[in-house]
Length: 342
Image (cartoon, rainbow, N blue to C red):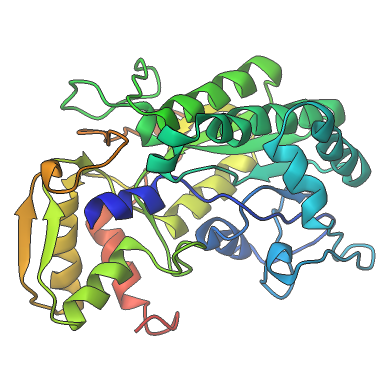
């Protein structure tokens, strides 16, 4: 169960497209962009405020794009950008054409091929999206002078560390997914200096995963209410992170010129088992929960044993650290009813 959750929570998303320009929105709307994780290839926004579709539904789900009035929304059919993001060579021209037409000030790239075990069997696809797709966007951003925001992962680490990794620590990925995400970081850094790379970890939000329609928190609550015995690994240590907290931090940093690599997770650390215990505590549930080792869930890809990230550069930039993971989880649980999750 925990290994399956690690698959879904390893990155923001992969798959659809939305492009938005000249769209003024309330500040909190960016939380929906990052949290929703159903906008899965790229979002492009004109101005320092990042926008999404007015109705909150990704264009990929509608199967068509649309062009609206000036100062409201300019959306491009998803297939035009998706193919170019995911492919090198000729298709990259589609990304360049769309970005050149919209001429955004900021591009928010939420793309990833993040099915971790599938990456082991389909390394070419993982690199097409996680490496060459990032290259395509970086080249297009450079041509129009747009800032590129890109999301990466804690899976770039899995060394013998027992203290949180800083941005200056040497990455050491042990799976194809982690190698592909790190390679994408390197390409972006080599092509275009006006970028933000945010490494995130153990994401959960009300929208859930596009593919599975849920997140780890909701999955555990659902199993508990069904009265099923639950086994969760206790030898994979990370920092579960609220997408709402990530979104707020991204919004702050994206309005500055302090470009570069950032770790962006909630504070503290725990195993997946400890996280699950806290979920049940705050949700008022008492299911049959057992701690097991990773050997109980054999997987093709090796998961990090320890991938806790230290948000050192965030603090150095003068911004407050993200809340502790327990505080973030309590806020999530408290807001479930209002979000339609209760």
